[in-house]
Length: 397
RNA sequence: GGGUGCGUCGCAUAGUGGCAAUUGCUCGAGGCUGUAAACCUCGCGUCCUAAAGGACUACGCAGGUUCGAGUCCUGCCGCACCCA
Image 1 (cartoon, chains in turn brown, red):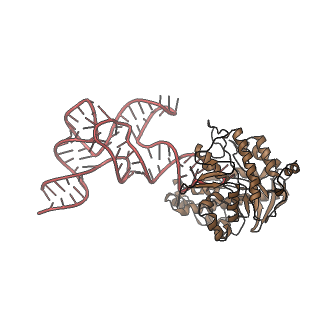
Image 2 (cartoon, chains in turn blue, brown):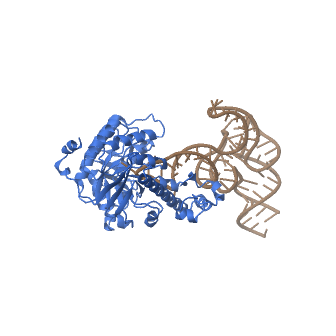
Image 3 (spheres, chains in turn green, orange):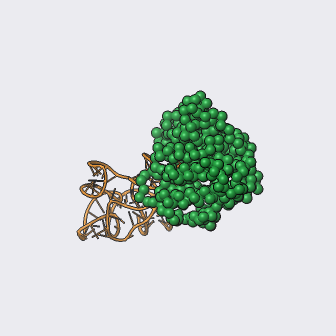
């Protein structure tokens, strides 16, 4: 089946590229689809399953790269759209590429800008994310365009967030930028669809994303690895079609993107449809999912890597994750609390700072409060994922 | 001693006849999943109500004018500035 599909590809795409990346599955769980693996890149190895920390603007917000490394981060993901705007890929290229620019010598990914097609488009128009939180009467019909973007067959016209100038990003442009940035793993340019997009819209978008996937592969000149992205929204046949199509292209791994319906069960079903169709031996990256409670589920579903803004984004909004649950550290009750954020946590923040102090920093709007919680949350998440890797090793998951 | 100006919900402000009263901050509650996010939404006189809504009390204090006063008038108190 897959071979047949591959036969439909243009001849140029038939040969697998020779990227500086390898994926090895060390162990498959007998209890679930979970796998223990190792992702090798020229900047080092990533033990999977792994949480990819988000460094959109070539920084994990509030932290230095050294600090990020201390939290147990193995790999980061930066963003093509944002870095193209700010400071521009040429600047980064002249500084020796993203690794050198941000002083991060471990593996790096770059997202393609496809998520911004959604977040700055329909996501913004309707004030919703890629998981529907409450029922919506709105629906995105085939042929609809977001207010501030124009989606064409060749790519997307954006408005700069900084000065309003027009920016164009398509598969070729995204590849060129990602090659200038020089991450170990790039993502194909896609359109992340909205949870209120109807079947027709999602299908048309999917076909476009598939064309873009081929063009992304075709435009690639470097030895960087590239992951294709599966779309198809909440529609089973589209998800499967997309997984088969993208899975049949000579990518080095696969991203599972797009909307994830309106509840966790639906999301897990959707991931299941896709994983079933993807080539077993290649890494699977789940894009932008990673609430703490999601992590064991997605790992059991067969996801190898996943990125999520939650540890850092929530940290800046005063939410600290602990073994006893999430706490809103800025609440006045914590001013009296001598304990660390988490008594069981061995991280540097929990060894040295009290809830009282961190609470004070938040209430006084001191940026160090955000730094301390970001560091702790990342440490906490990475430690948690490590226990999951151990669980797979010990056949507990 | 004389003159001028000002006193509004914890703080700061808007408000020159229809006002439970603007806005910001503080405070409180909620939200955030490939980061337009050190952000956003909501609440913030008291009481009743699930809510719609209702009742009461309020713009330094005391009087007055008026159908109606935070707004106009008189006196007092306090603060600031100017002149002696």
